[in-house]
Amino acid sequence: MQILRLSDLVAQGRVRGKRVFIRADLNVPLDEAGRISEDTRIRASVPAIRMALDAGAAVMVTSHLGRPSEGKFKPEDSLAPVAKRLGELLGRNVALVANWVDGVDVKPGDVVLLENCRVNKGEKSNDEALSRKMAALCDIFVHDAFGTAHRAEASTYGIARFAPVACAGPLLAAEIDAITKALANPKRPLVAIVAGSKVSTKLTILQSLAKKVDQLIVGGGIANTFALAAGLPIGKSLAEPGLVAEAKAVIQAMKARGAEVPIPEDVVCAKEFKADAPAGVKAAGDVQADDLILDIGPKTARRLAEQLERAGTIVWNGPVGVFEFEAFAKGTEAIARAIAKSSAFSIAGGGDTLAAIAKYGIEKDIGYISTGGGAFLEVLEGKTLPAFEVLQQRANG
Image 1 (cartoon, one colour):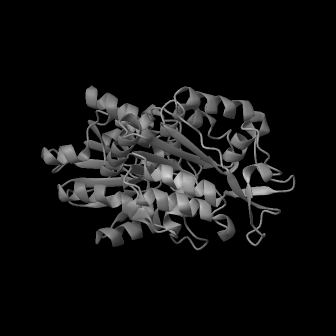
Image 2: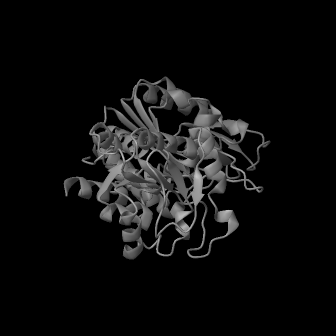
């Protein structure tokens, strides 16, 4: 993908003394007292800010936080906790600037945080007048928020159209490189794991991947729908019987290419959806009418682990069982450890996937962990994200 990168501009000496506007993703969870409960996104934004500061730029950073109403700023919408944490990570004071659209005072070597960009009227609708005002604040626009790359908004897309220079920050560039490596130029076999409660939410992703991957492992409620498509009983398990035909079509599309959708041969069942519900392993064909399938069984887990260990590239989105309950976590753990052990290049994304990676402590064994939820899913679906599109246009224009 042809895009300009902040690192290119720094190497060319084009950043010193320039006003640099960084759109970061600082949308972190806050507790009831307004304190940051998890700061991964803030830490991930630091390299771009340091890169610009070290190159002698006057740096402005903004982000959305929560779901504020445009034009109606409330104290709970404020990026004040983020400014404090960012200052701690950078080892310097980070001033928080409100009402910044019409002008920002920042000197080379300094950094300011611009208050919640989603409070600005016209942000979500990608208003051209607002976009032009933002673009006028800077010499260089840096998109470094992959989590918002699937949205065409004023601070992500509009500003990139009108800023004198528009480029990708290191976080966004790393996402582009990892996605290209995993999907555009994969080492084979390419194995995708797509799990979740509903086929309907990931049907287009499954259909898109069915044209590309060598093995498509499905998990969770999605696997139950595929089990129905294969003629297996699923008891009272979560599934979408109305989408059995679509599941069959995916299986056939894979089969026609000499690829496969492995259907579980054994499963872990319970009578109730509870953490302390007695768990039992059953052959997939022996599931009773009052059973809930809550995990893959040990035979299936071993077979999938062997496939993953032989893979060339792995794309992972979603746990294969109710891993939050210990009795139904063994399948997801087996998958996670197999991916960690594999020599394949692996890319993982999605909130539940990241929680599983953290639970089993395999962060360092995953090739790339994507920071975007919706954006990651849209890439798997085969869509061109607005952020990628506009940065390519600017690089070629």
